[in-house]
Amino acid sequence: GDSVTQMEGPVTLSEEAFLTINCTYTATGYPSLFWYVQYPGEGLQLLLKATKADDKGSNKGFEATYRKETTSFHLEKGSVQVSDSAVYFCALSAPNTGGFKTIFGAGTRLFVKA
Amino acid sequence: DTEVTQTPKHLVMGMTNKKSLKCEQHMGHRAMYWYKQKAKKPPELMFVYSYEKLSINESVPSRFSPECPNSSLLNLHLHALQPEDSALYLCASSQGGTGIVDEQFFGPGTRLTVL
Image 1 (cartoon, one colour):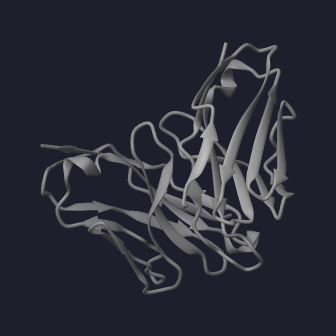
Image 2 (tube, one colour; image 1 turned 90 degrees about the vertical axis):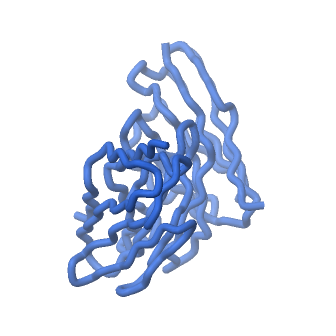
């Protein structure tokens, strides 16, 4: 079945460091790919998305490229801030369910130190 | 308005109580979802409503009973819950519609504790 695998955390970085969170997926068909972020005590919010191969999603300095050949959607940011501390979920929308099922990775907790 | 609201924010209930969680959105979305999230885990899908009809039930125990009174509202009725049902319950919505694969908008969640 469809699945998402992302790097285990927690990831601890100093402010202004470079961030990469790896994400790979397995899916039948052509899924849409997402990164969601969950700040402490809140629900999830969409960070960025990509709907087809080679698309690059970007938002708030974060970016990720849909790589079909490597089935990957790695999240990157050039310079993290303390306010980026949160849990990041890579996800895919399973096309064989009409898009109703979102498969989430396990989540990666990021701590950014001042 | 791009917000999904959920009430209450916190709920403590005994195993014999009956309570309800409420969710509302005014984005014109036609798909609405209930998720359960345990600490340090990703959300687990429970139910999906599409055009006010139940489309997906992920084999959820009958002590959880969803209801979609109209396209903006989603309820989750709780009865005879167990302590292991304690979790964050998230509501979400998406545009919905045949062939649309789109992102979901999440509410802030209801933190449920079952004593």
